[in-house]
Length: 79
Image (cartoon, rainbow, N blue to C red; front, side, top):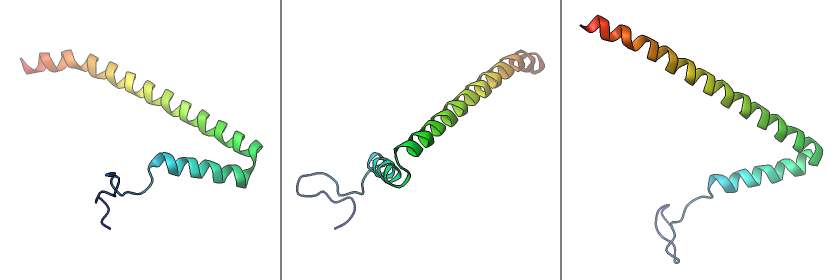
């Protein structure tokens, strides 16, 4: 059956979504690592994600400040 052809219930026939894969990955990690090490791993991932987002916000604000400061110079040089 082709990938996008609807099934009998009218839904497209496709592979499981990202949520299903994530759930399977977490379940497998829980079985392999155990509850203590899995908790430590998830905390480390959460900290890294928070640090990445903080760095992203900082870079974005610095870039915006730099572009706003440079904008008047561009207007002066065009006239």
